[in-house]
Image 1 (tube, rainbow, N blue to C red):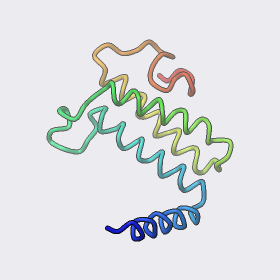
Image 2: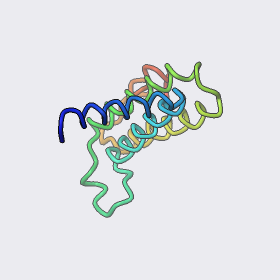
Image 3: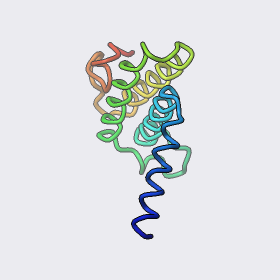
Image 4: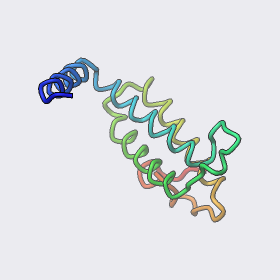
Length: 118
């Protein structure tokens, strides 16, 4: 790919993203974090779901999701924030259930931002 073709591709991507409302970008990122965290918590719909489980990685993803949802909630409508909070809470509970040594209430992933989940 020539340098001018690469530049045109980058310019097109910038123009495309400039047309997307912020709320759509936020929700898309949150859904991607949720999907990745679910897989890392062992919730993949695959026969080898247990092999895909990685609670250290899940913790990082859930922390990032909690920070995003908490920070964005005041700026997005309740109709968008509520399902994100529900999904986050489900992941926090799934993490606790998957953990061989569950964190104490209030110390689990994302609870710094969401408060205790039980």
